Structures are given as structure tokens and as C-alpha cells.
Amino acid sequence: MKVLMKPIKMIAWFEEDGKITPVRYQLINEDGKKTININRIFYQDEEKLAGNRMYIYKCQSIINGVEKVYELKYEVNTCKWFLYKM
Image (tube, rainbow, N blue to C red; front, side, top):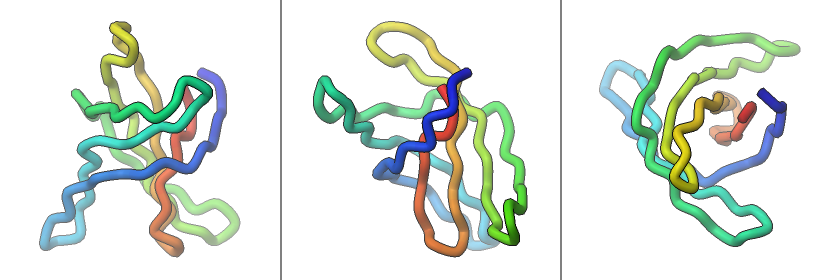
């Protein structure tokens, strides 16, 4: 997988207990904007990078007719989402 770390627009589901579930995101690339539905979440993990808490999600979606596995990151302090690896 290639490291991208691109900021993305995300629609996510927040539970009352604080659990976050990503639902779909918008990716802007040279072809334009694409809305991608998240079909499957393999796992969620948490890491601290230089004291900054981040949640990592390994997901799977169909992109351009091809099933792809990728990683998303959610930065807790800034509430920003990133397409981390694809």
C-alpha cells in the first residue's frame, strides 16, 4: 500500500459511548470528486503519534469497479479525516 495522507470529507456515525464508524467519504483527485461508500471495516486501532491521538480504520470499498483495501485515519484533536494508505 502507498502512503497518501490526503485530507478527505467524511460522513461518520458517532455512538453515545464515543465509538466512531466511518460510512462514506468524498475523494478529490485529478478525475474530480468521487463519493465512496465503505463496504467493510476490518478493524479499528488507536495510535499516538508525537502525542497526537489518531484512530486507524482498515476498510474495503469498490472503487472504479475494483475492490480495494485501504486505511483511514481520524485525528482526534483536530477532528480531521485522512485517506492514509491505498
